[in-house]
Length: 130
Image 1: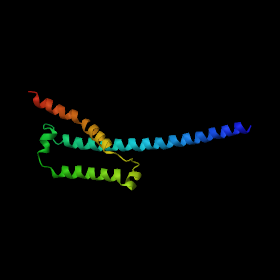
Image 2 (image 1 turned 90 degrees about the horizontal axis):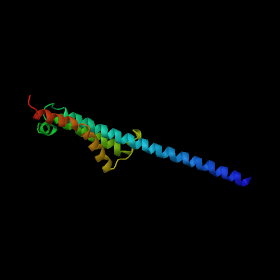
Image 3 (image 1 turned 135 degrees about the horizontal axis):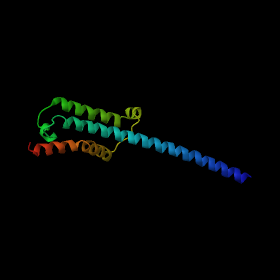
Image 4 (image 1 turned 120 degrees about the vertical axis):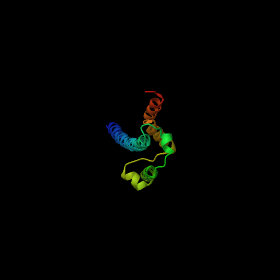
C-alpha cells in the first residue's frame, strides 16, 4: 500500500513539474514570437516608408534625395526598438524577449523582403514601353 501511494505521489509531483515546465516554455515561446513579430513589423513598416517615397523611382534612387524627416523617423524607430529590446524594465513591460544579432538580421531580412516585390514591380514597369 505504501508503495502504491509513493508511486501516486511521484506521478502527481511529476505532473506538477511537467505542467510547470510547459507553462514556462510556452511563456518563453510567446515572448520570443511577440518580439520577433514586432521587430519584423517595424522593419517592414520602415521598408514601406522607403518604397512609398516614390511610385516610379526605386529605393536606391530615392535615397539620393535628401529627406531629413525620413532619418528622424528611422532613427527614432531604431532608438525606441533598442530601448524596448534591451532595457530590462521596458522589455518586461512589453513582454518581449532578448534578441540576439542573428534574430535581428532575420527580422530585418523578413521585413524588407516583404516589400521588395513592389520594388521589382517598379523596375518592371520602368522597363515597359507604353
